[in-house]
Image 1 (tube, rainbow, N blue to C red):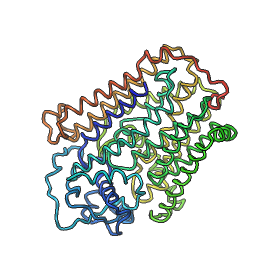
Image 2: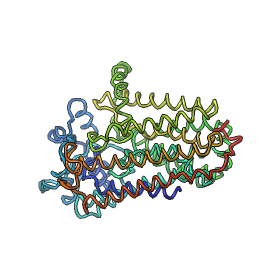
Image 3: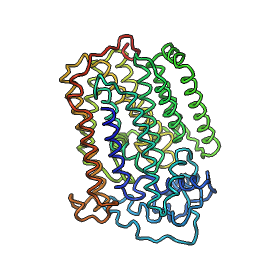
Image 4: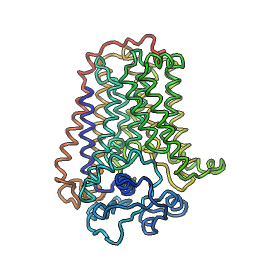
Length: 506
C-alpha cells in the first residue's frame, strides 16, 4: 500500500512538472534565476534595485517594492538560459499561456535581477547545478523542476514509510492523504523553496508521530528525522520556527522522560541526528542574521494588521488546498468545501475516540494553527505590504490532520471495521478527486483561460510537451493509484490495535 501511495504522488508530480507553463508558479522566474546563478557558483550576487518595469509587471509598489529592493541581487546568467517570457500571463486568469516564447532574448546584457537573492541558497543548489545542463531556458526549467520533485518526493516517501503499518492497511495514512493536498503536490513540481519546506515539515512531524508509537525507534526513524529536520531548517526563513514548534509538540506528546529514553536507546544514530539538525539550524540562523534584511515591527503595527489577517483566514485555507499560478487559478468552490468537510469528519472521529489528553492535543494544535497563521500574517508578511500565502504556513498547519489521522489509527479497535473501511475509502476518493480537479482547473486556465471552453484541449492556445493527453493519462493513473492505495479490502483485514503504554494513547 505504501509503495502504491508513493507511486501515485510521483505520477501526479511528474504530470505537473511538464504540464505547467514556464514560470507558472509564484516567484518561479526569480527562483529560477537564483538557482541558475547558484549552480554557476554565484552564491549571492550584487545588490541593486529591481527595475521599475519588472516591479510594475509584478504589481510591486509602495512598501512591497521597497521590500523587494532589499532582497534583490543581480547575478550573471548565460544568455541562452535567460527566462524570457516566463510568467507572461501571471495574475490574469483569463489569459492563456500562449504568450510564452513570443519574445526573443536580449543580447544586451546577461546580468539579471532576482528578488529572492537574499533567500537561503541551500535547496536551490542541486536543481541549479543540474539546470545548467539545459541548452535553453525551457529545458533548464524542466530539469530543475524534475530535480525539485525528486527531492520532495523522497521526503514524502520517508513520511509514508514512517507512518506505515502493514497490519492496518491504509488507515495510518488518513492524515497524510489529507495533508498532501493538490497544493502540496503542485509545490513539489515548480522551482521554489516552499515545496521542500512543506514536504520536510510533513516528514518531520510524521517522525514525531512515529516516535510516539510503542514500537522501538529504529535507526531508520532517526535518519528520517535527521534528513527532514535538516531540509526544514535550511529551506526558508521560517523553517527553524517550524522545527522548534515540532520539537515542542514532540516533548508534549512523548513527554520528557519518554523522549530521553528513546534518545538513549537510539545510540549514536540519535546523537548524530541531533548534531546534524543542530548544525543545520545554526547555519540557517547565521545566514538569516548576516544576509537577510531585517524589518522591525512594532506591536501597534501588528495589532493594526490583525483584522486583515483574521479576514484572510478562509483564503489561507483555500491556498493550502489548491490555488495555483500566481494565486489567480482556483478549483471549483465545491472542492474546497468537500476537503474541509472530510477534514472535519476526521477531526470529529479523533475527538470522539481519542483519550482526554489526545483531545487536548487536538485543541492545542487547532489553536496553534490559527495563532501561527495570524502571527505570520500580522507580524511578518502584512507589515511589508503583502498578504499571507497559504504555503507559507503549510509546514505547520498540516500537523493537525496528521495528528487526527494518527489518533484514529491508534484507536481503530473502537470503530467497527466496516466503518473504518468506508472512512478510508471516502478519504481516498476525495483526495483523488481533488487531485484530478486541481490539475484540470490549472490546465484549462493555461490552455484557454478560465473563461474558455471546458474541452480546453481542442482549442488550446498553449500546450505542454507532447500535448495534453499524455499528462492527463498520467494524472488519471495517479488518481486511480490513490484510490487503490485506500481500497476497502486493505482495511478489512486490519488487526486490532495494541497500543497499551503508548504515550500518544495515554
